Length: 337
Ligand code: HPA
Ligand code: ZN
Image 1 (cartoon, helix red, strand yellow):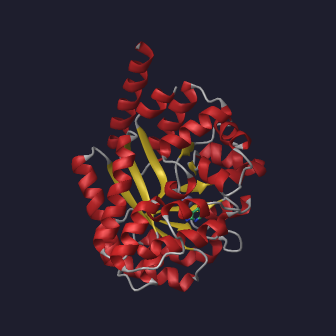
Image 2 (tube, rainbow, N blue to C red; image 1 turned 135 degrees about the vertical axis):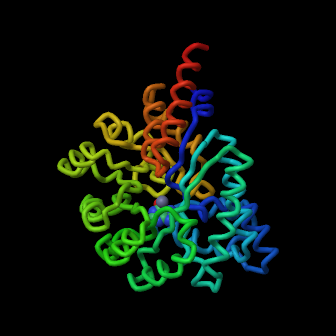
């Protein structure tokens, strides 16, 4: 089963590039850029990655991102992630970035976007790994700041496929960002939003009805609302679930309590993703493995999850077909062994 999980072609749709900053690179960049870190050592940093909820994680995550200053830093961060993803047979990835975390420290939007983009382009050429970029607004900041960020992004629009919404969910409902998402849609951006991670099912409804989200990030709390589940099954709006994240941030007490298998069996379009792998203890393959062991997923479940991810991506129909063909051939070939 572990070989199957490793080798199956995968797409990853919920990954924050700042959340892939491993302590080793964090320390290297801190020294290079002369930034003081709140950790004494790499081990000390890993020890501190013990969270009680989303906010306790975000506080540490934003501190870590302070070491990212130059375009090359963003390149190196992204390239390190892409190499790991390719080694786990990820064929396509849709990456979040949080421009406000950087522009607030005086780093230019362009520095962030170009550094990430250059690595994505190299991965397309050297790693057989395609990608899209999703710009997230920080929901703990106000709507006017999100609108300013959207304006700053417009000159780089050809690098960015979609907009999203992340950071502290409770108390920051999607409705706060209706105007900025309206404008983003009019400009041609696709739309996703984090909802129903810690927030109630109503936040998922708002993301769908008010922001017109085409995908919901996390969404695990949807099971508390039968009408919502029915709607999500009917529309096949994808839910990008992040199992290790959910356990680390105590959305579920342990992996055995995770509701992903129930979601899958209800016919929801769920996918498996790593969210912030440097902080949560694993990349996409480790997420699949932890889930499979705890929930006793079978080969069909894994196949379905991998298939959902390609279908839920923002790739063109032709590109999706190509990946789905590869996936089917892989599964067929694996059965023959
Ligand atoms: N939720 C909200 N904001 C985030 C997350 C998350 O899981 N990861 C990084 N920013
Ligand atoms: Zn996330």
